Image (cartoon, rainbow, N blue to C red):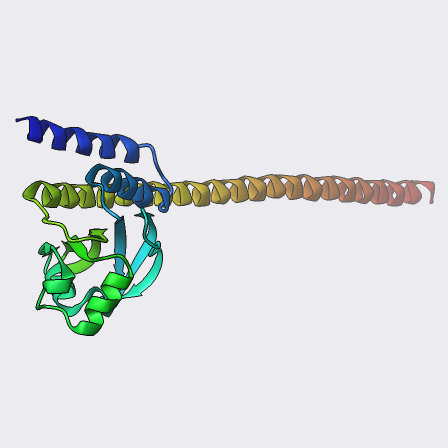
Length: 224
């Protein structure tokens, strides 16, 4: 029960931290920092999957290891990890040094990046792999079901927060566009009213000049 309460308290903390944020950089950064500190890992990050070929990390949490922010080719995750995450399945790696799913080159690359132990989840929407959340440790680690649960739930909350932020940004853009349109219409209406006044004034003057001319001609006939 205490473990369950601890998990819910952590997820509530994540939700509370993400709710007021609107910046698409701050949202994944905050989620990664909270989860990374809670689990005591070397790195935590949320990434967007671009065209199924690139993992785009906006900002990550890094402690004692180099940050990974930026575009990373999917191949750098290793074929086994990419395949599992693409299907929306968790990828669990306790120690890359002894895991037969990785080649020697992949092991060296991951260990060099401070990613000896990896736990990741993939988010699939409409049959498409759209995002992932991962935590890495620079030393071997036996990941638990609680770790996996927290990573998965944090990933979902991060995705939802980013979706809300995008929807709010789109709404603001639509409101701004409508405001600009309304202002343009008001300006156009004001200009039309101004033109109508000018035309009426010209007609009034033209009518006065015509009347004067007629009066002059009529007066001339009388004098004759």
